[in-house]
Amino acid sequence: MTLWSGRFTSSMDSTLWDLSESYSFDHVLYAHDIAGSRAHVQGLRAAGLLTEDECALLTATLDEVESEFDRGIFVRDPNDEDIHMAIERRATELAGEVGAKIHTARSRNDQVATTLRLFTRDALTEVARRCLALVDALVEVGGRNADAYLPGYTHLQRAQPVLLSHHLQAHAWSVLRDVDRLLDARDRLGVSPLGAGALAGTSLPIQPSLPASILGFAEPFANSMDAVSDRDFVAETLFCVALAGIHLSRMGEELVLWTTSEFNFATLGDAFTTGSSMLPQKKNSDVAELARGKSGRLVGNLTGLLVTLKGLPLSYNRDLQEDKEPLFDSVRQVLLVLSAITGAYQSMTFHAEVAEAAADDQFLVAIDIAESLVEDGMAFRQAHELVGRLVGDAVAKGRSFADVVLDDPATQRFAALFDPGVALARRCSPGASGPAASAVQLQRLADAQRAASNRL
Ligand code: ARG
Image 1 (cartoon, rainbow, N blue to C red):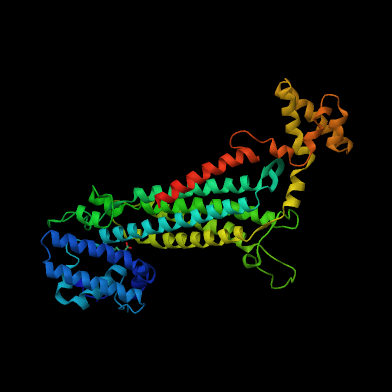
Image 2: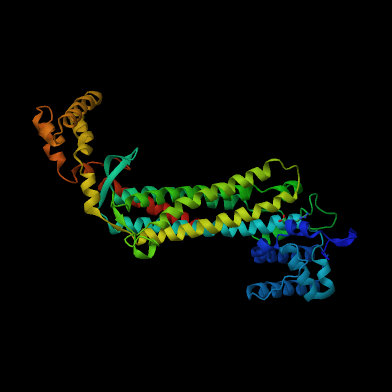
């Protein structure tokens, strides 16, 4: 018998039970559900619906149920449909008669919405925390290879030299935006649904503001129907996680490229690579491929939930039970990827000599010659045209670009630009990829890191 079986004459068909039960996946919500129930019990006490003694007994009972879960000794009854029913059933067994009062002025609809907000709030904090650890690692690896540089690419064609630290910090900025976004979503979910009941509130004299403040929510709901049917916070979390996952995927793709024999810019530590079951020489960057691969699933979870929500009339519909598995999955997966990618970067050996040789490609100096002509008074479009012709000449005649530049009276005074590292040092405008600008950026990044961790 379930706790709601009063009006039914036969028990549920087993196929419906299998379809309907959610304990198998929502048991992970136990601590958050019990926190919500503790606050609810306080609200009932304040409303005069429980005596002081009843309130104390129910609170102690909830603590005991939580400890059974913590110790892994909680036993599910075959009739426990979901985590909320399981906890109420067990609390009633332990507390006796007063257990029957715990669900006063409450429905599973406002209960599950409250529980899920509490879970999501913690999940967002944890994902943001791991994102910040990744930012730390990106900055640390850049600092450890402070002078190393590589070609920066556009269209995956060599474009201009960039410091490795500048490149890694580009990723760090995207992850810092993830942190801000995750914490913004956390701020927005701070509305307590508890007290909305099934959909329309209650005739009993409860004050939703009390459990709201006990639970650390900024305010109670304004509209009971919105309170039980709003899953914007889940959709938003799935989006924030999916976008973070896409950033991780882009990092993964790059690590895959960098660690190929063709690029050979970097090697990942043995602890972060895998072998082949057949080919003894292989050392694969699976960690980076999985970072790339998992992003598909994160986007899928977001898309799935949006589709679930799109046709729902107000207010609670059982479809909403489908919010949980995608949320749990996305949070779990992104945490796994964040930790593994952080470790992979920390384990990385950067082959500066290979990357710098690629960045010292003579053609990457073309823009510096053009800009030097500009400094001497030539209009940029003319300078671009002139240097473009020299590039064309070098390509057509199979000559070194430097030789062509040095043979031309218009450009022969720029020989020094071809010295290794010179083009990099010249990238000095604010936010640019050279050492001077990078030092300023590092300070700005440190400020942003500090501001983000203060929000945790
Ligand atoms: N397990 C359900 C969920 O996740 C709890 C709410 C059930 N409410 C109901 N009216 N059947 O949404």
